[in-house]
Amino acid sequence: MKAKILEALKTKYKTLGLGESAFSGVAEILEKTITDETQIETAVAGVEAWLKVAQGEGDRVRNDKAKQAQSTTAQTAQPQTNAPTVTPNAQTQAGGNNQDDLATIIAKAVEAATKPITDKLASIETDKVVNSRKSILESALKGAPEAYRNSMLSTFEFMNFSDDDSFNKYVEQTKTTATDLSLAASSSRPYGGARVPSKEASQAECDKIVNKIISKM
Image (cartoon, rainbow, N blue to C red; front, top):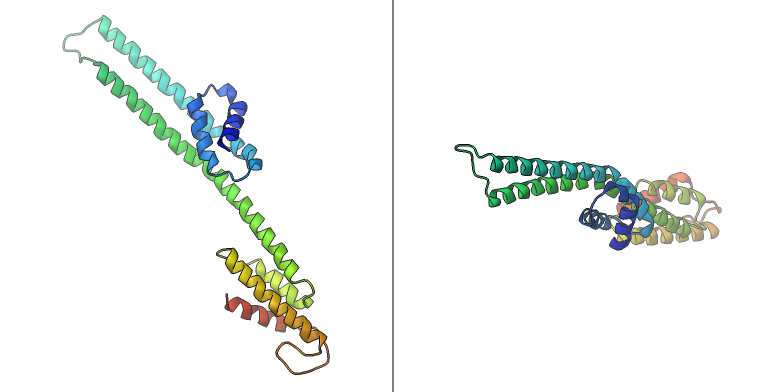
């Protein structure tokens, strides 16, 4: 997955002049948020602002280092009394600090840029799960009394399930109750009651049953 993300980044942003390491770093971060190849294009487009920030900061660091090198050269060419000596180790340390600053800026920019993408992908994934579960519930309610079916579907919109097991348990309870209601109606016997003329359960009765099922979750 990373290779495909990396290729997409290099193709879309080849004019920014960023190096392989910069693209590779972004690809590693995006790889953690992308679960399907169809999400690559959206994710890659979402980091454009960050890559431009990285480009600008990279240019700034390079310019600062160039100015520092020119200043050091000038001081060496024209020695001054009591002038501080710039040792190679000090130059290396200064360059390292610039790199550390750039790394910090990039890390913060990546976090800020990828959060909306992560949130969007999580929302898409959640919608997929909800729609899939709703389809399963609708299938389980086929043949159930209309009032009961409508009550269960309307209540489902406001329910949260910790995992698939809790949802599957809910569906099984729903199917059992739907079957009992259908059999009661067909045999002229209401759910849990004595024999009366055949009729479908009322909305109030169905709401009561729905609440009973939810209380057991």
